[in-house]
Each structure stands twice: as C-alpha cells, then as structure tokens.
Length: 172
Image (cartoon, rainbow, N blue to C red; front, side, top):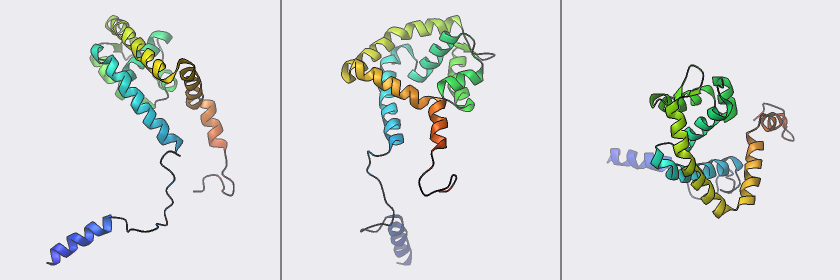
C-alpha cells in the first residue's frame, strides 16, 4: 500500500496542478526562434526527401556548394559562412570525407564530390521549384533576404547591443 501511495505521489508531483500557474507561458506562435526552427526543420525535411536519390542531405549539399563556390576555404571561413561552430562543421564534414566527397586538409572538393554535387543539382532545382511554386517566388526571395539578414554578423552584433527597458545588461 505504501509503495502504491508513494508511486501515486511521485506521479502527482510530476503533473502540474490544475488552475492558474505563476509561470506565464506566451502564445505558441509568439516565439520567433521556435517559429524559425520549426520552419527550418520542415523545409529541410522537404529538400532532404527530394535530394534522397543522390544520397545527400540539404546540409551536406550546402557545404559542397559553398566549397565549390569559394574554392579552398579554411575551416574557420567555412564555419563562419555556414553559421556553424567548428565542432558542428566537423560533425557535418565527417560523412562527406568518409564518402570521398571532400578532403579536410583544407576543404577541397574531390572529383567524386564534384560529381555528387552535379548529380544533386537537378534534384535541388526541383526542390527549389516546388518550394517557390507553393510559397511564391517573390515571397521566397523576400524570405531569403530576411534570413540572410538574420544570419549576418551585423544582426548578431545589433541584437547583442539591445538593452531591455528596466534591466541592466547581463541581468535576467
């Protein structure tokens, strides 16, 4: 009996009590960060599905594309341009290196990597076309412009300079 009562008390302790809570939860659609993450996950899932026949994910294709565009970026330049920290970049580069698509001395596309990028291009173009057909080409261009601003160091610097009225910097 006592063990049943303790188990029940443990379950009750995990569940919030009904009624008003002191914790103020904003509306589900109010958080810009959550909305961006959800949208990013959905769009990535859609692009990944279209790119699946060539064996690349959209994140991998963006790395290959950037290396092809720049030539031989340093790891720092590549991480910065993709808005990734170096450990996340290293994690994303491992399968590309394993599959001989890049060499990691300095990020260089191999011939196999160039061929994989060429194979993925019509699939990416299909995903891009589908996205713009549903979302609208003009709205997609405005979205990319807005997202480019959000990913910029200028935005990050300005964001960090904003002070909340009534609070000192570094105060919760």
